View 1 (spheres, one colour):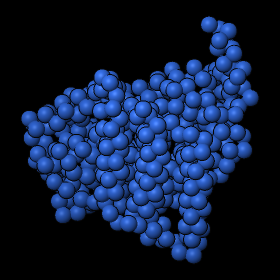
View 2 (cartoon, helix red, strand yellow):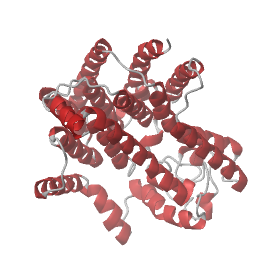
View 3 (cartoon, helix red, strand yellow):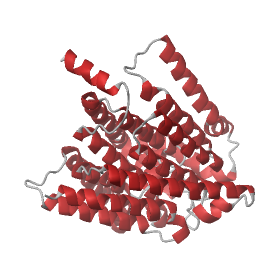
View 4 (cartoon, rainbow, N blue to C red):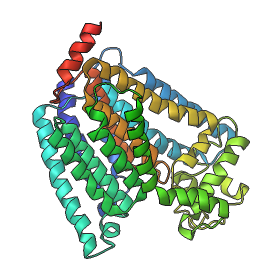
Length: 418
């Protein structure tokens, strides 16, 4: 059977990706590490696909591929950029979806011994990240030197902490340990991480413990408190996007991001409903193969967005959705609705709060990251979406590896209701 082979090698793949595609990505300085990880994943998926009868392709997977092929043809037709640029951007944009759907389709399952191995490795990686974080007390710029940027350090902490939580039994002690592991990401000083940390703490310590969520006065109060904490943590970004946008008092380092956000709505209007096409706006390829959109809208002279210096063109994710228009934005939202719907549907069979909680955390992670970073289409997004595919696979398979006093009671209630 092919499944034992998939299960065996998937652990190697995810540890390889975590090590070289996340922790050592910038230290190595080899920009194609994530492409190599993706290649290994596609090879493993190809072995799975050709070993199954009937080519078991997930319908949503086929739909996603069809959508990207449509946008590829659309981009060629309207001449959004050169053919090389369009192909380059399409591969970058589709990669996170392939990461999720390939894993979800293969449905790998890690044994307890494999999870213990990964858990131990994650604790070792976390200790190294802790030493790195403490190193900022001696050398404030150590995160830039070793990780490339504090944001990448925070993302590495998130990935390692998520892997630990996935391998845990979700006991109270392990929940607290997970929050403690995640907390060193606060060293990064990123306001978006503060908001994500508040959201994660709420889900882990409160949401995961309730039997059935009801919108009563108590829960409404707690939700409002959580939103208040998140808004307070992200107050710097709110100040930037609202106050500075109104007064036009924009810092030089953030002006490109500001311009991306203010230009995107006009592109959505001018290129309604399918957008300006691949490699045209707000993406890495649109900078390397410099898009004519920037001169058309008079923003090619903006610092960080010029033809000679385009380092900040892909500084965020949401504005780049203008490439796909209103339809593309709806499709992106539909993808996350699909994830959440599947998670809730599978959750009703097992009441495994660990997996449902992790799906909510990962969704929240990308929602927050998308405001100020193109994480979704990077090596960091690739890894987290692989992990999301693994989590949803376990949910679909009805895996119940957690120790929770209410799990059996909830299952009994569900059975009696039927």
